[in-house]
Image (cartoon, rainbow, N blue to C red; front, side, top):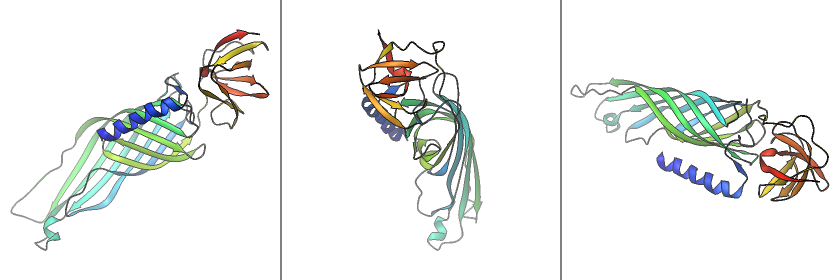
Length: 269
């Protein structure tokens, strides 16, 4: 699990060097107020000789992107898995074995890393929960008995959503109780977070400079709208309207909306 988290964190650094990045903003496909629901299957641990998965490891989790000015989401989840072990029966030595069931309810909080990639939501966070383990022995092998422990746990997780459309994608995550899990990702709602905004529209002679390597200019005021053009670092753009986080600009013959986080004070025309 630690290796998986390390690999995902390395991907953050590598991806951050290639794309525009804002640590205090949600990534492009997620906006404050969005509800994210993931469901799928996971790998809890490697099985041993005689182990049989009677119910595959399943998970369901949901989160709400908080409209608080920083890219944090909170939520809850539930995982379930069941194994049967019949080692002696495997070798024809009798009906001896056990069944173990894990139910793991938990709460979770994640920080979403603000890459300007329209299909990627990378996050890291913390989970707090209770691991409920149920152990049932069958047969009698010289009075042998065993038990499974239940108890509180806390753990870190790292994962990513890859969205194919505005609302549908896949989720991949590493963290307790699964080494790795993957499944369907659904997203609903959300709107751009407001910033300190100027009152009304700006002057038609208001110019600013682009402070990203390449800034997407979109058809509407959110990352969900199509890209109609782009401006390179230090390009001089004319600000037509300032409202919330997404400002309307003009660059050459292109008019559209950009994330104002990637503009810095230019010169007055």
